[in-house]
Image (cartoon, rainbow, N blue to C red; front, top):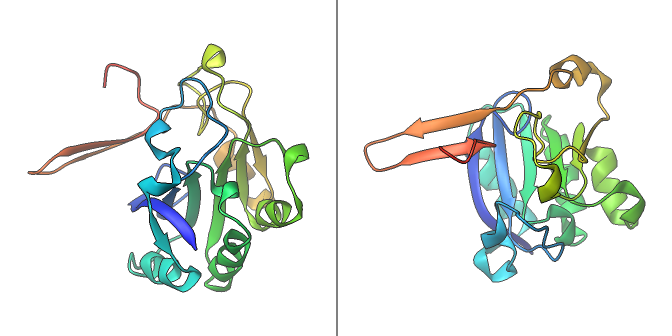
Length: 179
């Protein structure tokens, strides 16, 4: 089972229209993490790989799927199977992980290798920088496995997506504290 906090459609957690899957559970516990409420695995709902594929398909036309959290690479080997199915649906994967590549086991490396783009490294509060592309601190790196995407990830910039509805306002991305 994969434990998911939320699934939403967005344009800022990677390139193009994306299904963004926020996984529950993280034992890295980075000081200052903005997703601390996702650390506990019980904060999410369990999905089989097929159920999660169906949830992604419900969004309609997409460029790909973004795996974020929490810590996606603490989900277990089913995450590798999920990434493989995403690729079979002609979608790409963007992975956010707090791990460094040298810390990964074999199945985690398979997920990284299946990802078009990987944002890796622990968030470090003392290195916080909200002007970086897709990263919260300057020690984190972007690895581009799909070289066709290099230009899309070459310019540093803060991205924020704001959704205003009659019921609520939603801010996605890395906004400044005043938002």
